[in-house]
Amino acid sequence: MTKGKFADEFKEEAVKQVIERGYTVGDVAKRLGISVQSLYKWVKMYAPNPTDRYEAELTEFRRENLKLKAELSRAQEERDILKKAAAYFAKNPV
Image 1 (cartoon, helix red, strand yellow):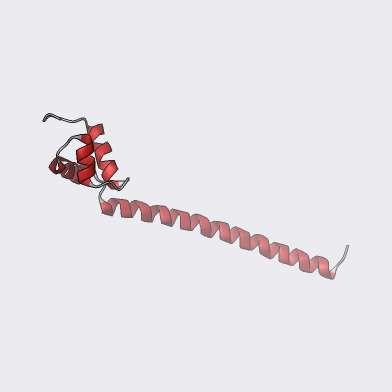
Image 2 (cartoon, helix red, strand yellow):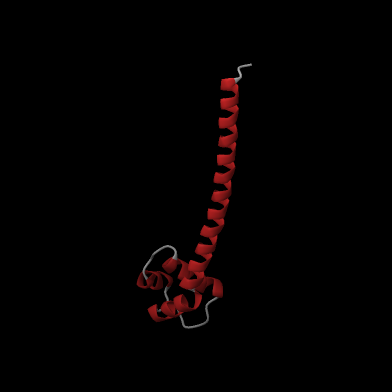
């Protein structure tokens, strides 16, 4: 390909192939007809910051953990009610 500007979407898709799909920079550059140096530069520009990704994952894990704790608490309360009801009916048959 001749030198020139590439669309941001093109650059982002090339970076996704490296970051998300696991292709090597050399393979992607060769397939797309761009220089390896350009693709490395795009990866630095467009790749998500690992710290930001870690923070987002951590936030998601915390959110899921709170949800699961609430579900567990509700299930334990229901279990306790059923235990009491079973004990009551065992002592006082209908």
